Length: 472
Image (cartoon, rainbow, N blue to C red; front, side, top):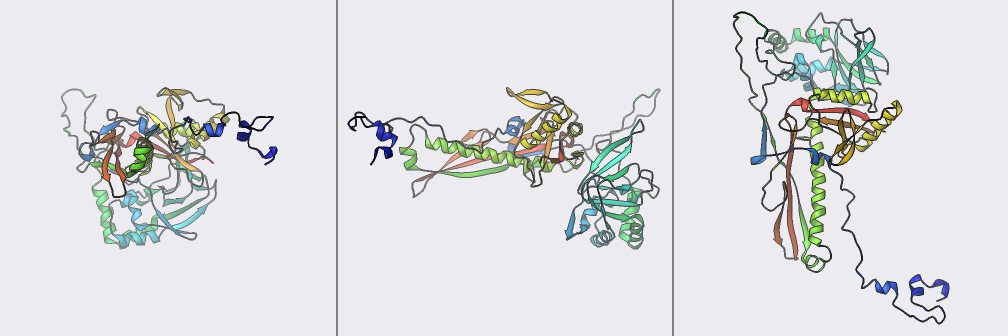
């Protein structure tokens, strides 16, 4: 071996003049040294602000019942479509989302009515209907985004709202023959809509006895009086003089309140006894395996609280609490609209880190610098004093669209609460247990790691969603 090919460790062990080793080399010495090391690292661990911020409520018996005042649900949901190539059709049963058809169940008539819709395409900027014109068609928005425009209080044009995929407008055409458009509808993007002429609806009503009876029943028995939130009204008298007869009233409750059952996330952690016995210095192998398993379980718990279709917050926001961005990126105007959906003591907003960055870009372009607030000893960006915390569990689509959530929290404020059960057998953390399952014939120790959790929205206006947020 030539001098040029000697390793640095070899040079450490050789004398410069005679080539003889005078002391122990560093490579050999490290075999006896205690190396400074870190515990096992895990890139998937996040701050989990949602789990930290949620007020947790005990769900005794594994369920949590949300009692509310009786509410009359108006068909204000969204309509679903199917497409074959460029042809779009509305699912017949989804027509019951229209107020004039709610509660109607004749599938054959609904199928006939679905066939009467005419597909139309509009370009961005094209006007669909003009304010003041008679409402002679109902429109279902299959794809795209439209602006509702009206006259402002000082004569200028005002943006009244934004409608997107699945929304509808002009439903008055099915109930009021003399209705006129109170606003102008203009396509904000390229749109595909399905339109039903009032004349086609009237012809089908004349042919169908069941549909005719349904229309007559709605006219003869309108809904009981409601307040602004759709709840059964409480009759009161105020500002009266003399001795008038006071109205009698009572507060009606929902007969079938919703119950949230605790969901579960589980896994079986396996550790070989040889590892647990011989390799526990300087770090306890079992403890480190358990720590990383619990971290992964908590990450999955937060993901479920956001995305689960049964109790996840993104899927449990009331449809009236979902709004769309005006232009795509999240602007200060959009966040003001979002805060207006949860105007009673909003506690916190959650957004994907990319959405927070997109909002910061919009603020920078306008010369606006949002303030920061203290959250748990750390500075967090805020808007109107409401902190905006990152949550990477909120999905971002391939097209670069995501959502931003705002919520009011706590039972006292009729907000959003997390559900869990503490006091479990072999509880390791609140709501999470680690139970020894035994040692099998392969000398492998097994532990059952379990977490119980859910979330509940106590009243609809406790949670608001800003959808179609562009972050690309």
